[in-house]
Image (tube, rainbow, N blue to C red; front, side, top):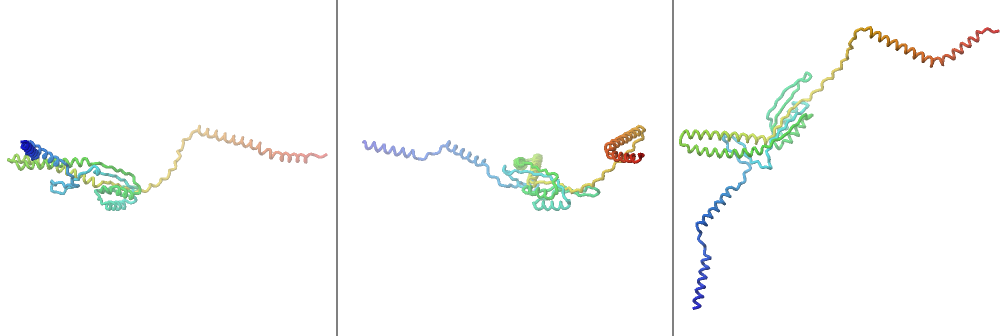
Length: 310
């Protein structure tokens, strides 16, 4: 009897352990939770940003070539550089040739040029103004070589404008406009009447015009950041003007005046009397002491010789 009880207990224990170890059948609640977790994972993967390519070509609305949209990182700013130079040169024609050589060496181009003449001392001297486009990485090299052309650098100004933020904003705006254009095109395909198609087509043209304006602005900023603008004004060295002789002033005759004549005569008389007085003083102090003794001796001798003798 006891053995039977022990066997029953052992069998019951084995059955219970088997039931606990058996895999449980998933309930509807467990299945729904698993599906929700999988959806969250899928959304997270879809939201995770993917690395952007270095250059993504923009779609061309008008069918022409467009510049690539470059995602400008913070470490590589888009700077629009400008500079103005006023140079004095020995010869304007030679300076233009050297300037053209510099632009070709740095891989740039001449945007515009102007030449005019100004007279100086009866001779016409040549002046020139040229606007250059040079690659941004050659900006400093071009500036240094342009300075070497001049005898003197009369004026130099340089500056820059950071357009990175504007360019990035235009990229975002362009993407939004393109998405709007694509949605409008689907509405155009779904139009039931001619009136609906015309309204949708008008909206589509408006959005495409905005896309072209944004694309044009982006192309402009891209070109301006890739090529710096340098405006150079060339002035020839002018000879110094001749020194004019200083004219001799002509005395203006004064009108005759009796009072002025009397004053001049009084001054002349005073000068003569003063001269005579000075002469008498000199004669009494210098001449008499030297001349008087010999004269007195001669007079004495003559008086002694003429005295009658007894």
